[in-house]
Image (cartoon, rainbow, N blue to C red; front, side, top):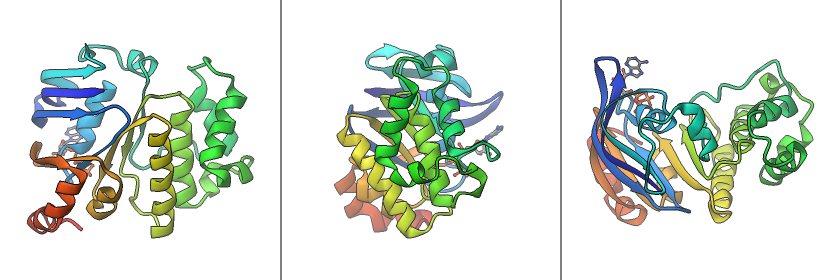
Length: 234
Ligand code: ATP
């Protein structure tokens, strides 16, 4: 569904990602792993259209979207759950969801909201609560829910597990598995290799802006302790 073809990108003259080629099959979970500064966030921001492309191509369903505006990519069905969640802390759960669906009036807002609550019943119980007063795990659920309000076919999730209790990581990963079963393709950026390998169909490991490993989830699991030790990852 998503292909990166020799993609290089960065920030002005700074090259953050160099010559990355990967293929994310439709209806799968693709894990992008690696230590701090590896270029994982820059890679998904390139897919969203938020960094400078230095070379290569981004293909969605075979169509070249490398030069498409970020806003057009949302219309093509790509949404991101940003690192650190970036919720509007003084807005309620409901209001944050409204913001997520604002530019996408294809389905009725109420129907989309109910769909989000079917994945995250805890959010339904807290719909009038300010998002800033939610627990870290609930905030991550809301960040995913807000992205779902844009009705994506491809969901890019940055650092899902960062700062969350193991039980909350389980709940959020469980929701991603359910989204996959419902036909949404997911790219999951993670520093928590072990948990990512629990759900990933395919894996790419990056370090210092380049890809250093690619394989299926089970191949990576077998090689996991090797590259984990090598990279000093958990
Ligand atoms: P992390 O998990 O720490 O976010 P990452 O693998 O997602 O790491 P990136 O955030 O993509 O890595 O960073 C890749 C490189 O790009 C790093 O060297 C970083 O310093 C640089 N970089 C990131 N954002 C910017 C920016 N806005 N301007 C300049 N350089 C940047």
